[in-house]
Figure (cartoon, helix red, strand yellow):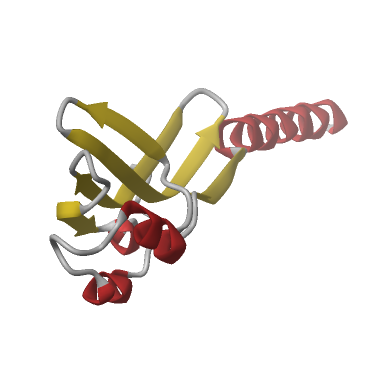
Length: 132
């Protein structure tokens, strides 16, 4: 009889060990921001046809990118927020990654006068999602 109890004890330990192996894992989440946040309120201070590239630089700082065009320049300002979640199990992993952008593009003529701009503000819409 003690041999039977010993076998049950070994099989019980094996079952517990297998359960622990198959359900063991890790959960993680993270957030990343690129560049400085953009202030949409500063756009109200700009006047098309009058504001200079120097004034835009004073308000928003150095652009993320400058594009040279045949009729002037474009200053691109970008801010992004990325959020991610992940679950790592022994045999399988699941993840979700969401990256959203704020972006303003200013267009200047050959005299560095702003002709127009375009803007989108979506970085705050970045969200942690379900990794499944």
